[in-house]
Amino acid sequence: MPTSTTTNNKAVVLVSGGLDSSTTLAIAKSQGYNCYA
Image (cartoon, helix red, strand yellow):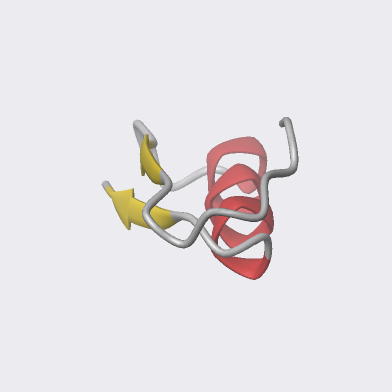
């Protein structure tokens, strides 16, 4: 995922409950994205 200095980043993450999608969501949140799952 690209890193940006703006604070209004949004991401839609499709979560199946598996390890891959959960990890993707956690990484996006840790990078400052406002996540919609």
